[in-house]
Picture: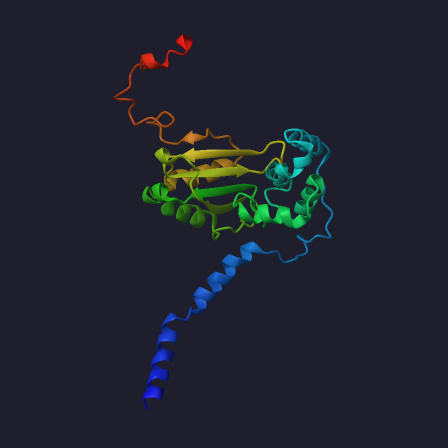
Length: 256
């Protein structure tokens, strides 16, 4: 009798801690980011190589490293490949980079799967990244992302039907004083015209305006979108440090 009660209680406890269907689906979705499945537009049999212009850029990148440490150029070469391929890295592009730096392809896959800046699925010509770290979250980054997704009619990491836009999330863009902020990776002109710009102090309304300006092909100034601020300065201008500070006497380098 006691054994049956104990067994029933144990099953109840297991049921409480057993992952739900949603949790299992979420886990499998997240781990899907770490492996590759062949598809018609992304498989190792598809030919891929750098353009003639980018071959010269690759040579210039390699020149920064000792000849016996070519593998040190993996990150900038992957970035160049991603720019050339419209903002994402097919497995054949990673294999091409492996040949350039003379390493096994797995060494390149390790880098491409580790850094979130490398996209291994298609993105829009304008890839919008919302900073999701704590300062931006406190300042409303969730509302920023919600406004973008609603306006574009997509979910996170989906591409709009016209192929122009996609929305992703990135951790800490390093400009917390201007939170919340987004980054726009512009792949609309390939590697020749590639830009990666910050737009800071944004609001839900402003990010929608930015999307429509990009759609019209307009160039918008990066940096703070708050007209009352200059770069990272306070609204209305400085109230302290109004003149250049005097250097401390102990830093008289000429006297050394």
